[in-house]
Amino acid sequence: MNNKPRIFCVSNQKGGVGKTTTTINLATALAALEKKVLVIDLDPQGNATVSVGLKRQQGAKNSYTVLTGRDRLEDSVVETNIPFLFLLPASKELLGMDIELAGVEKPQFFLQKALSQTDQFDYIFIDCPPAVGLLTMNALVASDNVIIPVQCEYLALEGVADLMKTIERVKRNFNPNLSVHGIVMTMFDVRSNLSKSVVSDVKEFFGRMVYDTVIPRNVRIPEAPSYGKPVMLYDFKSVGAQSYIRLAAEVLKREKELICHG
Image 1 (cartoon, one colour):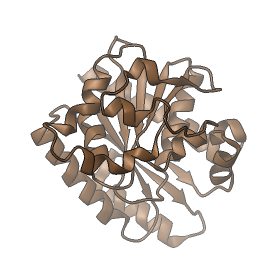
Image 2 (cartoon, rainbow, N blue to C red; image 1 turned 60 degrees about the horizontal axis):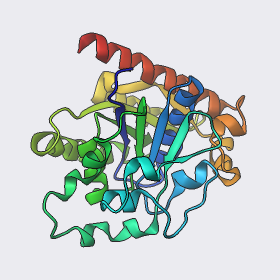
Image 3 (cartoon, rainbow, N blue to C red; image 1 turned 60 degrees about the vertical axis):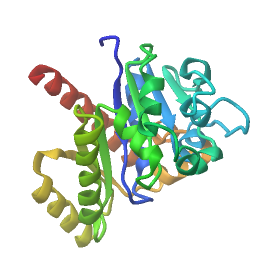
């Protein structure tokens, strides 16, 4: 790797589509390859923080204090129990960011500024809230790539189309290097014709942008966070864990292709 980390924003304007699960398990898979990985929890709910067995601590250094310039990123990152995986925890204070920074000049660039100081990670994954407010804008402006999890359900395509418009606006106005790395279909039900139809529609519309790996509905995936573990540590042999391992391999393959063509 070069000194500049590859930065991925995991985003969808819709909630409950598997953003946090995708963020944590991709990060864990890359950490298992001894890549130094940072997860930034930008969601006030703090699900990524809890999913790696850590607690939100009011007053501690976190993504809110880093975004607002109170603390430096390097001083605020914490180690997880997973080797090579680090976390910048969330805070409920993130809820007020849109109002707090309304009158500040260029508030979209706060995270980019914080990340420009670091060269100690190979990969950075940003877990976004399910809305296009200032937090998601900061993530998009700071990132190289966007990974979009899409639930296999009715109207899925509509939500992705809205996010694509937002990404295009960010590219045009703030971050010309931003690109969509891929779309990952989540919560796929093998018994459901609707799931199969949604995957088919999304692939027809977005083509090669859609990853080949599909994440199935698997009880182990929602169980894992309650034990403070990514699913691949909670139950490595489960179909959920194995699907995220395949997705990580596909992400790395695309990374090599991008580097070769770049």
